[in-house]
Image 1 (cartoon, rainbow, N blue to C red):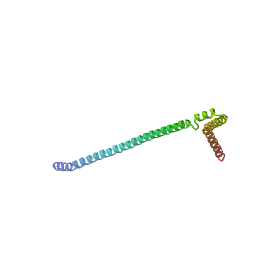
Image 2 (cartoon, rainbow, N blue to C red):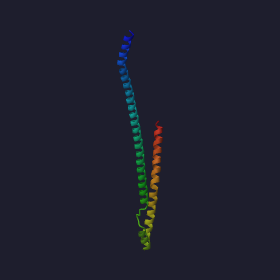
Image 3 (tube, rainbow, N blue to C red):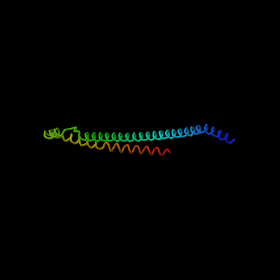
Image 4 (tube, rainbow, N blue to C red):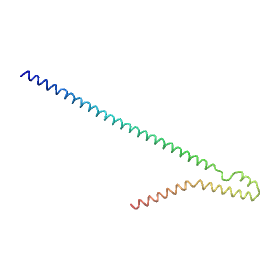
Length: 146
């Protein structure tokens, strides 16, 4: 019986050994594959986050460049608007050097140009104060309804 038990144990272990070995190999490969998939997913998510961050940075840089260009354009517009000559000084000098009528017209033109410059200088502050007043009035009216 001892020999028969030994032969049957050898046969069973000969059949079960490769099956168990194959099953363990399968489980190991499956775990390695799952690990690779998890690593690929993590790397993909990291790459997506990196690209999104880079896009935000580029977007902010572009917006900053646009803001700077707009500010430069506005500054240039204000600078050139202040340098415009609507009435040349030579004309005024010629009027003042002529007779009494030319001096009268020249004085009136100089006075009118001064008034126009004064009003042009007041335009932006007056609009600002007007809009502040209107927005305050709207806020007071809106809060009184609550």
